[in-house]
Length: 154
Image (tube, rainbow, N blue to C red; front, side, top):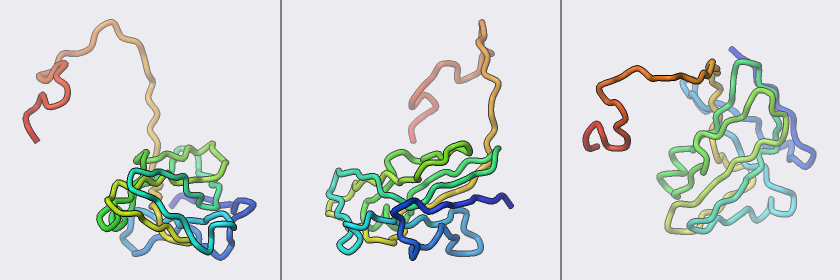
């Protein structure tokens, strides 16, 4: 098991739980909104089409050879149309700044984000780096240069 060390940011609310797995079989640990002090009591309202950076109140130290991927929560996506704009968001092992979650409301109604709400999930994943080289020619395949939709419909 790899270790992810979390440090609370300066204005973070220490009452907000660290990322945690909801069940024994969960692949992602839930991350909660740690809103700035001036918006904690009323929360934030995200109108349809609007996006906002939600602070987690955390910085992370991830072991070399791993990354943390931020992913949407399926319940928020289905029920409210909330998702992450850059899915998956990547937190590199050498980044030590505050972790934020870019939420967008793709739903038809305004959505409220409360202080402490579960807003995303983090998945710790191994990183494989490639040796990227310039080539004079690429091997031929049946697909060739066929792009979007070239292998059929659906």
